[in-house]
Image (cartoon, rainbow, N blue to C red; front, side):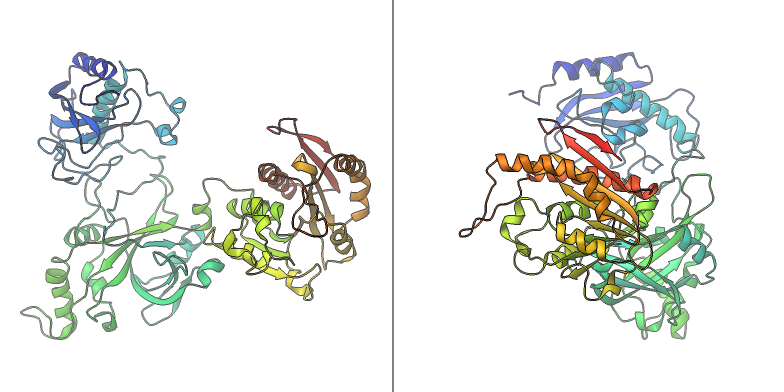
Length: 600
């Protein structure tokens, strides 16, 4: 086993290349930091022609941190506690003092390229050789210093970023808000700068909170934020305060306030008098308790562009002055309270930031979502079995939030080898209700309902508003009932089924007021005959004691594979529906690739 206290030859080679960098001086050579698990290299950087600024001297000290598997692993670039930068700039972590036993501050600068964030080495030009990698980061750090001194770390057109607002270790909560271009237009029409925010806690996770309504202090509704079914069951009634300012509270050059004094300084710099905000706080909030405060401001999508949505920061507002608690020279509670709040209460209270995130639909789904045409659909899913549950999950995670699930069965233990649900759902409630409850937990905007029983349900009106009907039952009787049912208007009608052992997927799609069962059967018949011959040749798996109960043979990997193929085909159909169409997909002999063998 390699002793990490002795630099490897690769690491020595990387270190030696710095001798050729004239503007870089080694202050202390490679040193192993046991607690941090990294090598540290203390360097002094003196970039030529560095502009003089109040925040960046001509020479600064840094610690390059290197993980022991160099030339792989992470490389960090931290200001030294002695002789290093003390301010925070864009593309830098908050530059605090850091732990006492570290010789460097916490403000790691970004010497990676933009695409390095994707964690794939082939996406950027960073060298991976032992000889070049450390030198490359040092040169990038000097380029960063020059750009910081010239105010060129961000450019018009770059995606907008905020400084890192350090979350309090005492507060685990995360507050989700739903701000979009549409809500921003609404805020533009609201003249108020303060009011009440109504908060809802998640019924299963008390640390998750959403801002559901913004009102005036007198109760007038200003903005109602619609959330999904899960938060509709949450604990309502918690009320906080919101303040609105003209721009992000930032200290120059790009640092988040860490104390209340710094916050009020930043608020004043944004053009708002903190006293005017505190003066609006109703007397009932002066109750010796802490309260939630949201501070909102407009932000653009990119630097140099006009603002397009609101952003909210959360903080714990300490108990404000009340009763006879005023300062000398001020009589009457209102003015005395406000002055005391600013001079005493807030200055002597630690600023505790609460984590906040924008959970608007377009924000929370940016990692991947289906087309607008599919996401805008309201879907009736008939059949909450293995295939139906897999497809429902993929639809939900891809941004299809309005789903109704119809099924008459109860989950059994044997279903779990292929189903999305868990032991907690076995025998306790119908598959439709259990699957709907589970899906609603996947996204704060999910609005999944269940319909118990057979199709059509007793209350046909409960399904009349759907846009797309998706049959996942592989049940001939269900297809007959679907064909005999007349919808009040045209719907997209889709039937999905699998061949034995999940070797094939059959997808039939049509649009109309009735499901064209006869057309589907005529096109599907040759394929079904082939499947039946295959089933006659094999011993089918069975389940339970007593009368033989054959089970459809298909493994979970095959079902999930074809569920993914199915939702891709659904997405294409939603964008271009047309004449009735049968699509057949099948795997190769190994089951590792899929090809389409029919489209018509």
